[in-house]
Structures are given as structure tokens and as C-alpha cells.
Image (tube, rainbow, N blue to C red; front, side, top):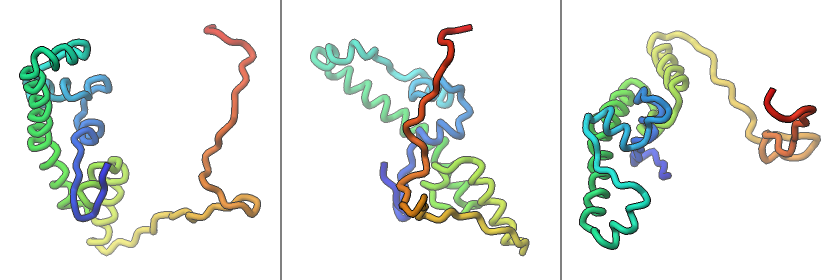
Length: 156
């Protein structure tokens, strides 16, 4: 994944996961194309892909292009206008607007509105980047290596 403040890399998959309001199992390209764009894209089962590539390369090329076209139209119809509209009211780069959670975006928008209205709001709490434990620098604060003992196993 590429991230930059000067060049936007907008991945439609991030939009699908956060903003498409599709059920959890319907977030693949085929399902999103069907629900959002209203057409069934060309589909080839994974078992047939290798034989088709050998025997019918034109059909495999058509399948590949249909995925690219679906992604392009999904991006142009939904992702691009949505993200850049949010960038007009939230002072973040398009990458950040796409990848941040809705809570962070809402908080940022509230802070912008508070600033414009001259309302003082507290600074965000920032943790010290160098965490120490008993005089030793911690690489991360997650705990690794624990285990849970079960007295009885099975389903009850």
C-alpha cells in the first residue's frame, strides 16, 4: 500500500468496508458490482481459470478486463465523489479520509467547527512514544505469550 500527502492512492475496498453499508459477506467485487452498479459481472470459477488460460485466453482476458471496468466505475461513481466531498469539510488528505474510522472523522469535523466558532476544546491526549518498563524500553505494549486453562473442554 502506498501512502503520501501529495498523491492520493484511493482503494475502493476501504470504501466498501466502511461506507457501502453492505452485509459482511457481500463485500467482494462481484457482490458490490451487483448491488451498487446494478449488473452481474462476468464470472469464472477458480477451477476453470487455468484451463481457460490455456485453451481460451481471449475469454480470460475479457474476464480480467471486466474486473478492471467494474472497479473503475465503482470508484468513479461512489468512492471519488464521496471522499473528495468529505475532504472539502474535513481538513485531511483523501487517503486519511478514506482510511480513518467514522468516529475519527466526526471528531475532526467537530474540532474544525469548534475552531471556526471560537469554541475552546481540549487537545487530544498523545501518549509518550517511548514507553519504559522497569528501566527498559518497550517495543510494544501488547502482551504476548499468555495462555488460558480450561477445566472442562467441549461444548456444554
